[in-house]
Image 1 (tube, rainbow, N blue to C red):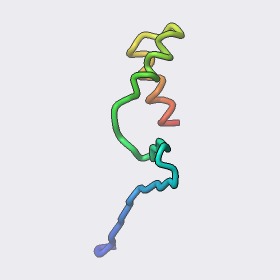
Image 2 (image 1 turned 180 degrees about the vertical axis):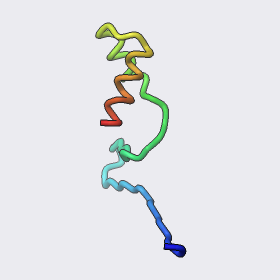
Image 3 (image 1 turned 180 degrees about the horizontal axis):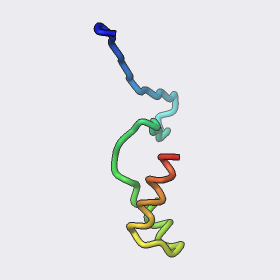
Image 4 (image 1 turned 30 degrees about the horizontal axis):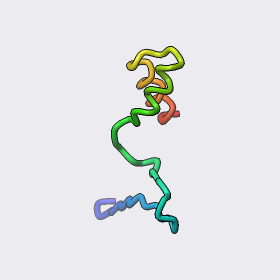
Length: 58
């Protein structure tokens, strides 16, 4: 174990130039359209963010 090496390289490839791909290990901003959708259903911005984050953690 003293000489262990771990490599994790998330990669997704697609053969379609119009494809929009996101790896589940991706880190980034929460998409604005996701927030807007949840807010139109009556959630506050903070509640919407919490729902999105909780969805990824489950």
